[in-house]
Image 1 (tube, one colour):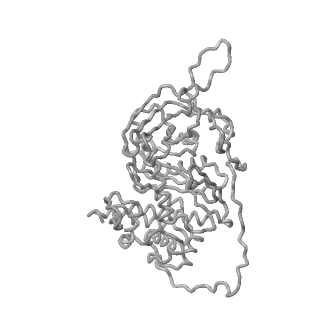
Image 2 (cartoon, rainbow, N blue to C red; image 1 turned 120 degrees about the vertical axis):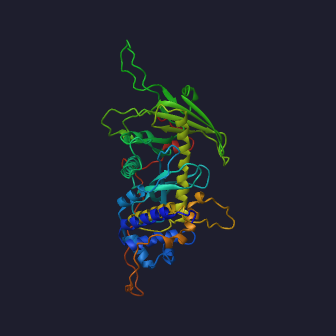
Image 3 (cartoon, one colour; image 1 turned 30 degrees about the vertical axis):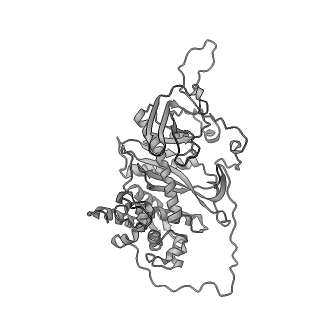
Length: 484
């Protein structure tokens, strides 16, 4: 251990383990020891049945599959437990939440219901593929500085045809309300920043979360068109309606930008000089279609700040394109603009977490058929990741000979997991020892399984229930779309 006084950290980890065991309402001991096997197994998790060989899993492989398929987890209580843990914060003490979707690909799972076509990137440049699987939406709290740690707070499997924006709003609302109930945010604290990528409708999400203490920061496509504030009403002798929207702000046309309200230039180690230009109080022009087709009240004007971020060079040497951001906050000063784009770049730490979940903890390794069992396994992985985060100050650096030494406070999640087995004997282990049982007779020798598993088609539906068609702006040889 790194600290002489490690009692509080040990107590926090043991307390979470006891609470996690209380969240398991059926097959509790089997599920708990399965999570311990994920944390203590040698090397990355390759197969689900291989976890039954870990010494921390005292049950057989039959009990392992029985726990995954027939167990039960009180996810609401586990969500409350995750929200009550110590969370990372930004430099100003603000909570920063990132929302992103990661798929559990099941291209050959014809007997798996509720699969959707998940957007994935191919090996080639600008190569996109739609592969069947279960998409999961995650919410994670971000840290500052260069790190691969995030604090996972929630996970929801997206059903075929789900409205991603509506699911995201409900998910973020639940997370924020739990954080407030746990005392993570109090009246007078800075607003919680919610960071989104370009696949989300940031203005709509900001409008739906307007009654919560949050600000929404999202990336926008480079072919968007926004509107300036409503001009003052001036009497027109010719009559007609007063204009509701100001002039156009076309991302791809610098002639429409005008003079920016704030400009910042920052020297960075990876990107060289980063320049952020900000324009205040811009909004999209909404129409009664798609997500707003059932909106009975007058369409709102959702004002925000647009930031155009450019860097001197990219570390990978790729194509250097500007990044367009939209934030629901207005009248921001230079320090706030600089803070926003820095926290957006920290959103990519979630990609490190997804890689950790899949490649080391084996989140997508089991070939499960039931989506409920997949949800159960996903929550076990989230609980295991939370224990790794609590064990950061408690484990020693068991590095390989070819790895560089790391400071105790900068151990990666994989290195913390490497030393978790040595910590396992010092923390609470509420699971009871297995009872001796006799195996059942099984299927008679020589007989065949005559039960034919049901096949399911992949659900390719939009939120409106209509079939998916490839958008015209995704096809080669077409002009960029013009989105108002």
